[in-house]
Image 1 (cartoon, one colour):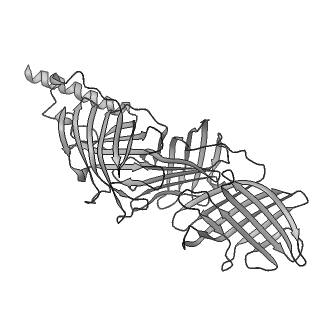
Image 2 (tube, one colour):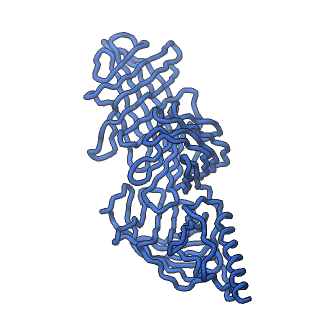
Length: 465
């Protein structure tokens, strides 16, 4: 009879844990829970008044942060020890920074008190939505975080953490270190504020899911930078949608230069879709203030061709202010050659014709980000400006372009360099409007003495006189 009671108790505990996992509605890494463990937890000693509040706090490099847990779930493994990883992401109270905890836990031991989690098995990411992207990379002894689990009862967890984070915007293992002290968290698995910052999609036969650490508008493009849930801090996911100055429901296609997707995991791009490679359709389903809901699907043709399906995303766009879209616009897409694809766009302000004693000029002025990004094309010719081809370094029909981006990381600039040939083609011009395209290498200036050529496949413009 005693054996029967123990087996019955174990059955209900197992069902409860599985229910907690499913209720989170999050994909987990492999494999099924093994139900026939010989040491089920004794539920008769569970404390009835154990409370959690789905919150976290810590001090990083002398600055205090605190906020809420928005997502938490379990990743279950086979008969390994430990058999479960706890994954938890949170947001600061002002919604300007994110944090992610990941640490191992052995559920088969039932409730726990004052458990020291080995630092080499644990993980922490903190992102300020700016340059300060801080992580504990795996197998890096000088940047680790120690977790102490004070109490685990049922699916409620309280704990502490402290250690050192690596400043890691570009996976720079020699970057500065930031101390983390007085870290605390308290949450119930499967519960949270559900802050809108998640994504998921089917990548061939596997599920990829994670959260966005940044959602922002740069030059008419909604840029979503995310981190997949998983064991590697340097996995990244990026979705770009050229929406115009106002984010609005609609369908955006990559071959039009209006959508792109990048999914990187060490040490290659699993998926890379731009305006010439693969197919991608992104649908913005709804816009409620600065909260966006959408879906996407397509086909990856880079590295290993595979379908991308059932893509879903939701995000809160930081500092979003809708800008009225003009009927006259400019747009360009560039690829640095290092799988770093970018899209930009904006409004055309005016087009002006002038002439001197021996030259005719056409100047087209544009902007985006309420004037914080500037765009200008200048064409000159020894004959009146007309349809046809203009190029850099050609005195008879010269093409010049300057674009200054409002990216917060650096005041990124683009300009025509006469050492290479870049083309502009006027497709139509009359007394009212001018339309055309431009393409070829362009110099990319990122501050200091850092510059290099990137390639524009097809920029576009339409302007009114």
